[in-house]
Image (cartoon, rainbow, N blue to C red; front, side):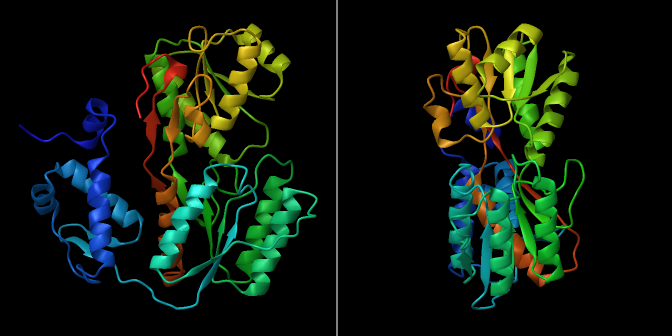
Length: 375
């Protein structure tokens, strides 16, 4: 009987750890301990499939993640080889994340970066912005100036959102780093409105796919009038999620409803219910979904009986809301590690084209859509 691949394994045994992650961790440790030297060919997919008792699809997924982390190089027709790593002692990288401590995904991303930077013998500088900064915009500019004065080797930048001047400020910061020759790796989002593209590498998830996944799930749960709801002045990731939502709507043949507004206003949510009569909400992120759920509860709208709702991010509180939230899980630790290796590659190859390093994301089904909880 053939072995199950990861996708089927997760459906049939949702509480069981992903086998591809175990294979990834075993190979990562073997490389770190020197079992496989730089430039050495690691076992083939067939060999790993046999020794690990896994399908080739599962092994291929583990190798893909190793490549995203900058640990191996896959050569068509030849195999996978341990990458030569750049070892320059004493490098310092700056973290420019104005929403650190406010947007939950960035804390685990930073944890992943810290672990990866120790492996590469580099250090992370967490910034020294003054506490009396009048706004996130000023704080971000102060941090940028500080990192330039410290002549850091590179900066990891999560661009501003939810501020009217975010596009102007983000671009000015990027221009300042470019002018001083400091490479930048973007975390989670670009500085440009979607579908425009900056000149920097970006590490995150495929947000268009995330928007498609949650919308498609609502339609499969029987919804017919699904609304996408987000805050004004959001990051480009929200536009990507809207694009994924629209693709799922077109595929299902339903009506497209996109609203940008105040999720904390009960009157605003009440108007949406009267105007559109939705039976499902795709919220731009978990924070927005939680706010919408509170307003729906105040309005006496039963979740999931009357309206089903989803978020994106799988933040810590999404599973402990009064109705646990269906969402898309971001592999935050892996995003952090991939960002570090992307920065090292950028320093090693400064003239290569800018890249989007998009890691896989996972639909997490909970009771806000009426289905049994699967984690």
